[in-house]
Length: 386
Ligand code: ACO
Image (tube, rainbow, N blue to C red; front, side, top):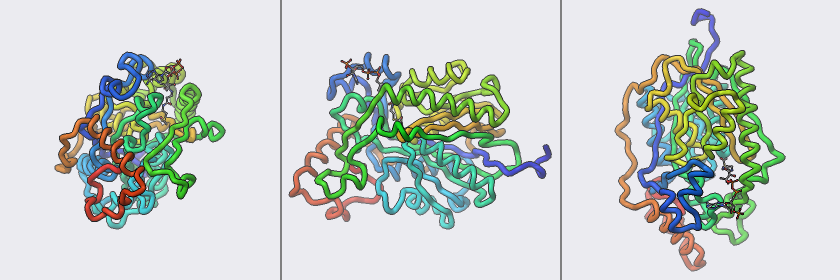
């Protein structure tokens, strides 16, 4: 098909990630929890994860700046920012508007999406639709998560699974057959109670619950079963919509919650593990950030060749699930790099967690001043809430 007659699509032209420098190993975790490296690796595939010393906006801003540089565009070129996350610095104003200011995307629309771990996939889907229908021609889609302040560090069932991080992609309108070719989104709402983080919403307001103090209700095995079913079903549905088969897929870049889930999805979707990108050992589950970080690292490691067909399946609380089929473009290297960096950090990951726990204990003392009474002392986006 000639380019002029072809329909508009949304190509991924820039990508960037931001991982905070402090690394929490399984051995570190076994000093504060009744767990072991052997249990965590054999049940999940996770060896270490990152813990952030800064707030969510800062992580996302650095990732966004890197994605813009990789695409060779300015913030002012961006017309839409979709920010996927469930661990906001603030609910009001939203996170996307903060990124709009930081990158100078003055005329951009800016919204947040929360479908937990699939928030990046859902954001990609929304941005893709708005580009394909001509509403905007250039979008920034972010998946970023700051789980550590919300983690119940006394609960070994969940504390070993998650990490902090951020990544972003730039989407640009093209007449070439690139970008999202087909997709399938869904949600097993009837199973939504299998994964609930109590303490993060209005249900708990004015009931003596301290923000940041959470209890994770988590049915690991049921989530596991639904995750495999949802990701495999969505993958096959997206392929069918595009008239393609598993043999056509060059690389699967899945959400990474558990290595055994990834292996089961690959088996069911009919793609051998050699064509599946896995980085869970280094990062754990970063929720919305997982998939775009994996995409960035697959590119950095030369696993994405020009014109490759990528399959991006994911699942998250809700229980939401989905899969995108993406045709990569000609360029697999960034056009430029960004000078933007995170503020330096000297603290170890365990120090950061201990500081987080200390803030929770301190806040539990009703005589303690509320954070906004100290607001002048808190530079915006510079410190993780706890
Ligand atoms: N260290 C040591 N032992 C542990 C730990 C730990 N960190 N956590 C649980 N155990 C124990 C349990 O208490 C249990 O002990 P018991 O037999 O004496 O009762 C035993 O290990 C087995 O526990 P299971 O829950 O049966 O372990 P399973 O093999 O199912 O693995 C896991 C648990 C890793 C959570 C798995 O079910 C899973 O990956 N589930 C889905 C993944 C997931 O939920 N990811 C996050 C979803 S959020 C998202 O991505 C949207």
